[in-house]
Image 1 (cartoon, rainbow, N blue to C red):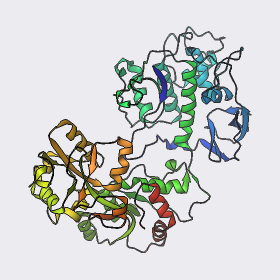
Image 2 (cartoon, rainbow, N blue to C red; image 1 turned 45 degrees about the horizontal axis):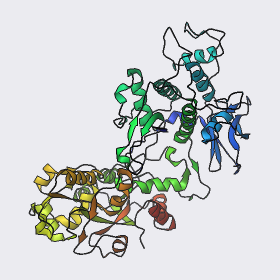
Image 3 (cartoon, one colour; image 1 turned 90 degrees about the vertical axis):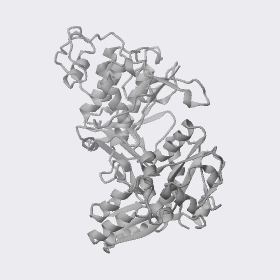
Image 4 (cartoon, rainbow, N blue to C red; image 1 turned 45 degrees about the vertical axis):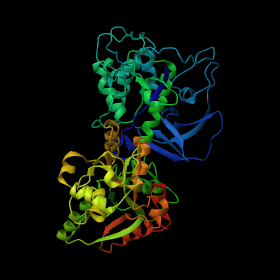
Length: 550
């Protein structure tokens, strides 16, 4: 067994979504620092008023951040990282020891494998979050008022970290699920959780063994990107498909696991909530209100990255795009200023005309409509005429009629308000509609799901090969997130879709991504549109994994 601590971050598109609590952002203070990194030293914050170390603090990219819910100012100090005779790596042990959250022993050891008690865990949480010990009685009959840990237990009980009970069991081992529940309650108390998020915990083989009181904590922490302790059974070093994950929720928490957990929780609190700071070399032109298709979300993300450190916490940064059709409608209705999208559908053109809005299309990136099938399918190329017959007439049901093997041809399609469908209207349908039988049997409602749907169909139906379509750069990029699929792109009339053939326009279904604005001569929006057509825009497009217009 290998022990790890990990956060699983749910994705809404190609990007991870960070957990962000708006009321916590104002509690994260920051100061600009010099590059003071020196081996053996830890840079941390010190409260100017009290002179105390601020454990939840760290330095990154020229700034030091500190969680200071009571306000005030801080300064940075460099502290020699403690060195333990039996534990010199990994660094989080030294980090937590330098911050006074976990101590070593008098003999100079850390004893990473020693199990923590519940009273010790109370002290760790109080130190990390700077919860002052309380003089009030804890309410637990087995916590003596004069014990070294009574103040910690009492203070945490007052804010709801420990559940009400007759006994606290101070000398009992703190279990993994107890640590998870404590962490959940503490992060809820400081406002660091989005309670509307849910997680898929099916990867854990023993999730059913988690006690009822802790199940919600596992769900919320994982959904928000925080850390839970688990064990990985690596059955094959070279193949992760056989990996098995176990929470072992009733196992005692070791000092090493505690150090890593506290270190990562502290970092995530700041990472998810640190205020956005405008970069010194950012353009002077303000970012307009942005939206777009699923496939162009990376463009928006990279624009904000070019402008701000901690861009994901900027109040105007959209956590997702509204998809092609909805973003066009939002632009037409005046809800956003600029969208990044492929061509509009006929329905969108009619909607703009109905609203009396003229749209201005500014090409910012190369794109193309592509078709894919199983990589085991021997067919290499297909024609526009054949694709029209397949999708409008449902007229080809065997790959042999398209120059391939004797195997059933099963076409998949997208919904009519998708960006991919607009490209089908432009290149394939020629005024027709997707055949009703195809829409009824094999429609993919998510942009990424058409890849996984086609791939899954091919795996589960020997002797049949599905056909799907998407946009070239999205097809290439999304597989870094969903994992590689056993698919291949088809040539069109003998021309394969590549960066070069799309860049020079020889691939027949070459198109563009556009920055689309209302044609109203707004000087601020026009200025940003011009910025997107220059060196800044090229840098954004390249970083987004899309085709820079030559």
